[in-house]
Length: 278
Image (cartoon, rainbow, N blue to C red):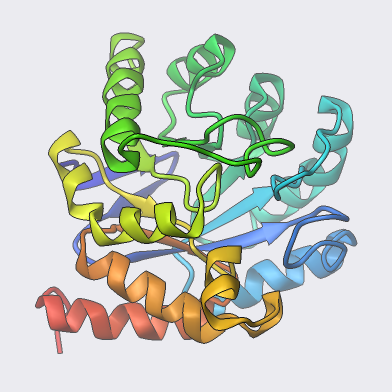
């Protein structure tokens, strides 16, 4: 596995669990939609996440919640561009752009983002070209279908095996194109039932065979609500349980809304794993 990845002027090292803080600048994201549409509020929240221990800030301008409608490239760029431009000079950690659109990714890299987080898993050849051209790390996420339809009865014969096969295919394609720094994300909640998500978390270590850092994003997801019968903003404890299990089973990066609390949980999990200097 990669021990570190270069993100522009930054370097991410995987000697401990890294925390990716979520910054959605959308009106309709499932958890924090409409909270950070104002650029000043978004920047303030990003800085707070850094203060709370985030290692990466992941900025998204289009909701990928189940049933969501896509937005135009122009609208997505309008939402994120000013925030990235301002934020890159005000925080000392890498900025990730959460997009599946090559044009959006390219423009955001030019503005200061240094990681592409692609929910479409590099299935768009244009995104492969952008990542290779700018030599930035890429998160290849697995999603069955698209956000609008992905939760309409997703079916797998063997969810872990099928996701692993997808990663094997996509990482080979990425490396052939010259992309060296690849992170994989099994896509908790993206075209998966509660049972699928639990099986992924339980068997996360099987993805280690691909020799890529593993990112997981269970934060406040519906499967936690289905288990606890709690609404989206009451799922912190469930999120902490999910990321702790993920870390023990091999996750290198956890993508979360609640950075402070999840950072503390990750530190305890790392201490149990023996990778935290006490």
